[in-house]
Length: 79
Image 1: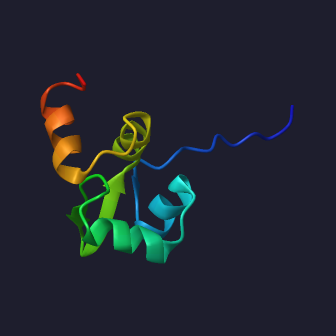
Image 2 (image 1 turned 180 degrees about the horizontal axis):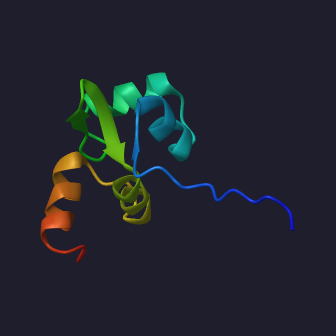
């Protein structure tokens, strides 16, 4: 039996990985963040991170602004 290691998808990612998930450069991600166009970030141990689940929802919901994304989350994802 071959040794198989299950790869876990991270629940939280830093900016570089969030940008990669979305297919943009880290610089573009920073620009989008500064203009309020990405999902909410969180501070964890001095690092800024994003929930991968939020990034996936944000893309599924056609990349709304941060304000609109938070409204959709509060409404339970009803558009």
